[in-house]
Image (cartoon, rainbow, N blue to C red; front, side, top):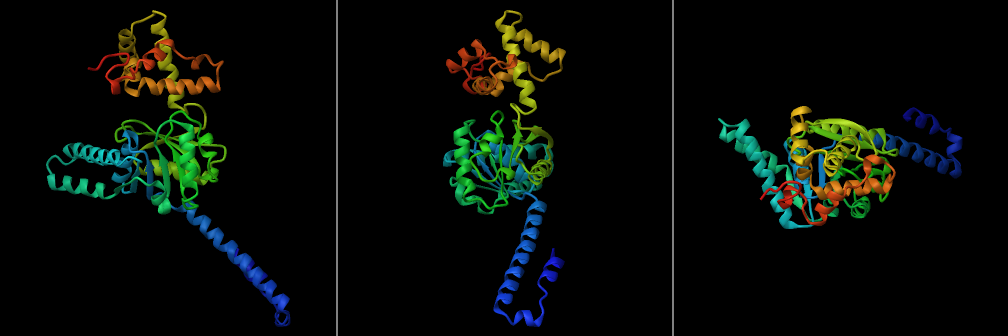
Length: 337
């Protein structure tokens, strides 16, 4: 491209005597210079590693992602609208790191303290997302599973984030395409679905839409690997890979119980001892949250009402209506009080 500029910008002395020729020469030079700079800038964006991360949502998932990113040397800003939640998140991250230190630095207390201090130095908190995205490479959202709220968040941040910044959602059930539609950076938008608890779970589902550029997708894959995770590539389909298989499995377990074909205790024991699963489906439902499972199924039923794998459950709906969400409320399919 530089050689093209040099060739196009070579004019004779007589041509430069005319102001029209001078203007034309300057315009041509400006055009090619702009093209060169643009090409170099695009290349820099493509090759730049994600180093600065803004995580929206100070809950368990957001804090877990923040911990892993900070531990692997990334600069992290954890954002939430509630200052108290952020303080609790920071305290939780430090507590989690102390548990890591007990295992990894059992005989080296000074090294353990240094490790915690170094990781925590990579984490800062803020209640104002718009003010902290100016220098970020990645905005990762881990907030409530509500499409309009997610769209509103990304739509607002799209106006203030740099052009190179990649946006990603940690949604487990909503279409990435629908969330991205509120922004003007469809090619720089994807999904990063982590699993709870984030510091322990090795998998990350990396989701690309039909508009996600290959450069963006590659950056998200590289970021996942930099966190020490194992990424899998997913299409923007309901449930991606894990939940598309897992949620119908859990729902079929409920239907099996509803039909009187097995007690929840026997079904759980059968899947743990027969299939080698660490949890049975009812134990897993209580851990994930019955409200979360219902929310996912309601969304899938709306989009694909005739799919037999995505039919609602009266038993699940009743428990959720009674406020029995599982472990987090003290009761779901099992009691925890």
